[in-house]
Length: 255
Image 1 (cartoon, rainbow, N blue to C red):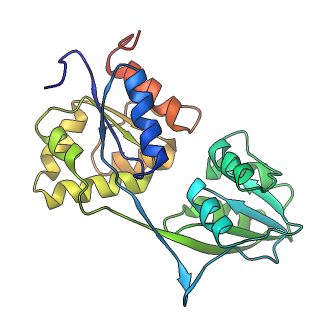
Image 2 (image 1 turned 90 degrees about the horizontal axis):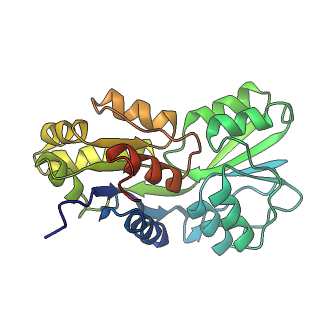
Image 3 (image 1 turned 90 degrees about the vertical axis):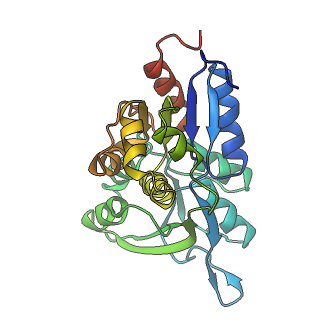
């Protein structure tokens, strides 16, 4: 049985080192983590070969650690292209894979990247390599800035069939906080709740708890589904999200 003084906090990261890091961080904050992966990766292929970003672009945009790892495993070479990372974690993955990083926006989001590139990409070929659930904010914004945009889907994001423990906890009033890291984690949480027959009860449970969301698109998806969002960190990274949500759920809880 968990200690009653410890917050029970759900994290929806993929079941890899990101989930391990999330659990470690939440434990360091004095919380009781509920690891409940809502995303699993299926790499995209053309026949038997993995899909890679195009090599004839002036700019190449990577938006996730997963995309970088898949591109590197497939032997992608950016050539003379300007390589753009949407944030620090993507940039770190690029460096670890041996790639240079030319541009990182001040705001780690699609909007931030569009703002950073908008004055430079008119007439340029921009390759956006990401998952099948990427936001249109990025591609539409770059096109509005005058770029010729091509999007390559490197992988698909699916819901693991075993997901949903957090939905049951929320439905029974036993979840103190939930940390949504993309619109898709919100959608998959609700799908898992519906599959278990507790969708409305889970939403009620979230509204009685503290809900954190990375970025405005994630907030909008949650609120459109009837979920009140309490925390949206200024910096769109998981550590900021976790720290602010734990503090909001129980001020000075981790001190």
